[in-house]
Length: 116
Length: 112
Image 1 (cartoon, one colour):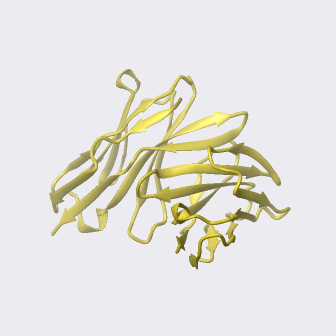
Image 2 (cartoon, rainbow over the protein chains, first blue to last red):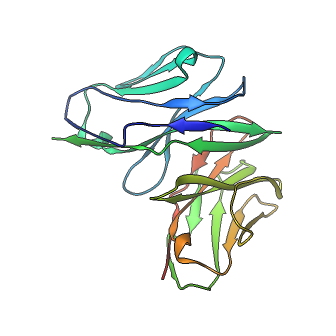
C-alpha cells in the first residue's frame, strides 16, 4: 500500500529563517505523482506543486523550492526567507492511479508557524 | 475560472440524522473526489466520480454515499450520523487524467 510520512508534526521558526519540510513516501508503482498542498486556517487545500516520478529535477518558485530524490523516496519542500503569511499546515501527497481514477494519499501534515 | 465551490460551509446535525453535502467543480472538470479530514485520522479518501460513475472508493462504511450529475456537480450523503462523522469534508475536482486535484473550501460538519 502507498504511504506518505511527514515526520515533523510542528515547526516554529522566526521570520526570515529558512525552513525545510520533509516528506518520505512508499509506493510499488513505477509511475506516480507527488504533490504539496498548503492549508491555511480557512481550511481550503491550496495546490503548490505536482511532480511526476520520471522528473527528478528540482524546482524553484520564488521563495519555494522542492527537492525530489527517488533514491531516498523523498520529496522535501524548502521555504527561503520565511514570512508570517507562510504559516499554515502543509501536506505532502502521493497519487495512486487505479485504471484512470486518481486517489490521493496524504501525509499527516506539518504545522508551520512563522513568528514575527 | 471560478474555483471549486461547496455548500453548505457549516452544518450542525444530531446523531441518527442524515446529511447531504454539495460540490460544484471547476468548469470543464469531470472528475470529483471527496475527502474527510479529522484530527485523528487526517485526510482520507472517500470516493471519486467521473461522468456520473463512481470510479474509486475509500474504506468507509456504506453510510457514506455519493453521486454525480450530468453537469459534473456532485453530492455526498451520510446517513445515520455518528459523533465520529464530525469532520471537514473536502471536495476536489480534476480535469484530464493525471492532472492536479483542486480543492474547495470544505464543509465543516459537527454531529452532536
